[in-house]
Image 1 (cartoon, rainbow, N blue to C red):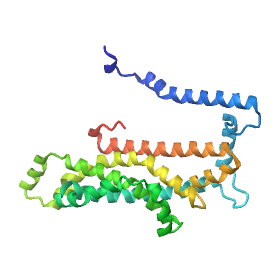
Image 2: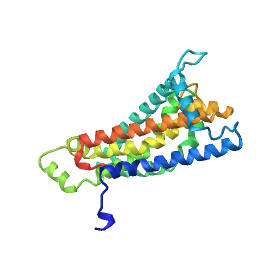
Image 3: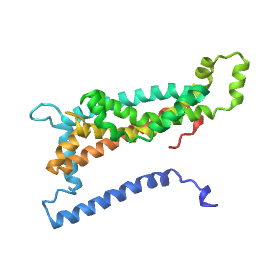
Image 4: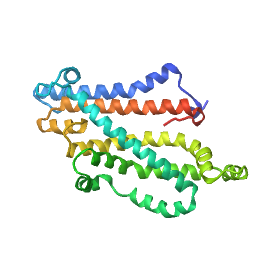
Length: 270
């Protein structure tokens, strides 16, 4: 049997999934041990034990000044911004994707604009957003929306365009209006792609969130990372990075499970 046709069993699959993480952990542990052996005061690569102790402290001990556990407080602040930004972008992308995909006039008027806007680096306009919307929550949410919306619009509109013309003609033959076709024909076929688009947008969304929090914020995961960097507190920074990675992974896993439950025929593999 050719290798291209082989599939790993349950045990082998678990081993193959865990192997890269084990190798990464070993590589970090060896590098940390080498640096600490040369300089016990080195702070660039703290030992795994130090990171674990720091994580336990950050997750359980309240801050002396505010009497709050800062990690949970920062997590809540960041997740609120991320959730609002992604939801707004998903809603706008759904509407505009339907319009561009179904209506030739909207496609002609907006497709070019969306393509051009998607080429603008979102972080380059961050100062403009701070000037226009201030340093509060609005500018951070707007950055997330601007950062991921053009990609989502292009992806969803393309999915609508890919709907077989015969399907639309059959709906028209049965007397369906353009609105009914959009809601009853195009939207159900677009929803699986919407979940995938959100999944693919989570990485950039986190990037824009952390960047905005690092520049202007008083709370949030990105704010805390850039606050402690001046003290070279790598154990704190790595704890926050690992926590952000875990949150992003759980979001992706939740969306993947939701897609499989609602649209099992799509065979989501991303």
